[in-house]
Length: 485
Image (cartoon, rainbow, N blue to C red; front, side):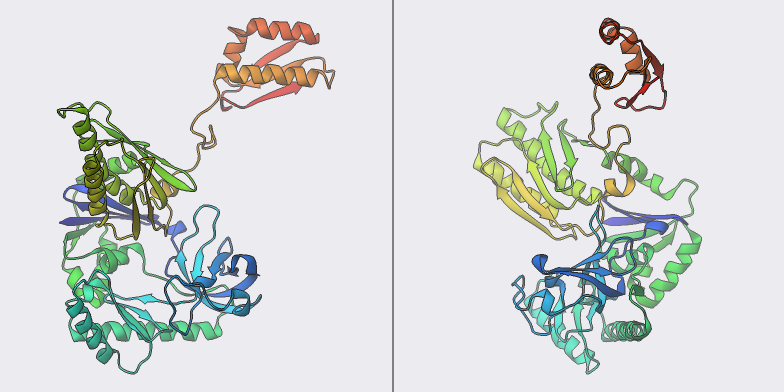
């Protein structure tokens, strides 16, 4: 069972999904940094790149967006992941106006990823205006039920055009509810097309729902006990939205009026702080080390202080089992995506490896994001991928440290002292000032005056120039200036 907590303020909306008392997911949307996934634009082709089979599209964002040939709409059905028969340079051209939809937000230095295969999400259905097929959510497993739903939809869709994908919550929907969703989606599409005829390139044609509204549409399900929101204004807005589009979910909506902030109920703010740390403690005494780089994320497991099992093999096995559960939760909580490498503690017995891998896959099955897990490699590593559609929690809330520039470490004061001495010698061979003045941090100046004073005095005698020192309190440890007077 799960609870959904919504903390709203004019500048930021935060949503936490809590399952069995533990935070599993965090969603954050800032008013000035709202994501673009789902938005539909009138875009202009800025440049076609045949070598990459891609094109840059101007849609009015800070950076040009990216359109790959695989994301171009095709009229004829094709084998999934098959190479397109027609190259991109024969399908689009510079200056062309295209209707495009954002399928991945800008991440790091990369622009948004686009598709010309438009889809509009409703409460029960996803509308595909350019197709005529009926699809069923993969989470609806019964083949008999899938065929029955497909037959119903073919009748309800009628002759209005377009295709539909039934979402998981459409499994028990009535015909009236499905017809209402069909009508709403077709009206939305007609309004988008009308705007597209008049709009200039770079115009926003359709904006996806806000995070608060997507909670009822996408995140609320049968396991949800309550959706608690701490804003009366947004509660009324969400209730009106829910009564119109998600009547089954709106019954779970509750206004939180407690004196303490709603996130304090489950210690959400403390959990956010822990989710930004490298080290994750396990209940057994072991721990994880999670390092996120631009290309991939690595997870290292250590036994730490855990010595509770009967022998070493059992200790390693129990630690890895607990780590598998924690890793699945941390990936969701931190929203880590891309390539992920997991370094479990080496296990001698093959059945232990199989059990740990099975536990990892079981825990990952609860994740709504697409995941692919490989087995153990020859080096004992587990390789997996998790689809990345938005920034991770760390990239959203943090920026590189201005002191270390994201390296995670700085030179020692002694190392900086020796850099300064070498720099003074280099400058003395090129220039002939009256005096050299060193401006550095307090720790560096203190070391030059104390432990390194003989070396500084020896250098001054060698170059025949005085060297003075000046402390600059706000200067980072590695930075310094040498002024020629």
